[in-house]
Image (cartoon, rainbow, N blue to C red; front, side, top):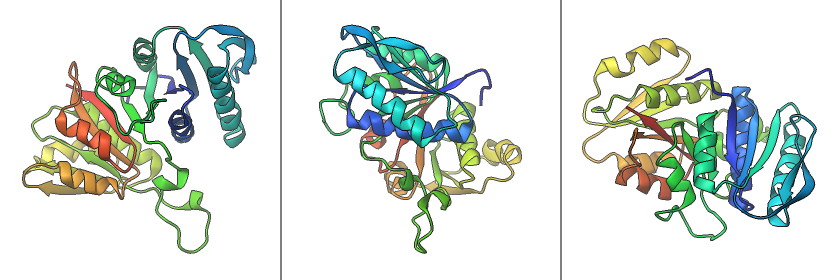
Length: 277
């Protein structure tokens, strides 16, 4: 992964799903030892003061009503839940899609909630989330509303705290015909920071040279390959029910394909969309 990026950035729009996404982003920032940036984009009028900038202790201008409450609530709740985490709350009047795309350039990962204020299921075509995931230069993780910390870990049966349980596998959907080092690297890196196994689902036979250098780079990561004859979509969807994160790719300069869009809409875990050559 690139070392010149500096934050895990999450879009906040006042919806419950964006707050759940912020909670997921905080955990990811803590895992990767990176600052967390909360970003609200839009054109609502601002009034002085109200939200606390955890980073430099300055008050900033925020919009009246819902947006101020959402940013304030997210920053304060996350600072209590993760007292060692560096949290930066920001608002911009720039429209959501260009603001989030610009923020993605400076982020290790951009995180968005899977439902906006409309409450519609999944990602209708033209939504902010899908529009950003289709064009961002960095990985975009889409977190479904209601996602809980324990959902990314193996269920506990002995009464021990859920936070001590091992992480569920990271699942990677891989096209053998794609030159996808960025995609594969993201999946291996994510599994490594969680000490989680990596399950690679691919159609037909994958050349041994595809994963060999990554296995050497991440010797502590357990890798399991699952070959599928035909469309891997159903297998990936099934695997998402027992995964902590599903990782899919898209060609740089193109949006997610039909199969990836279907997984975004229906997967049972957060989905990372990673651009690659």
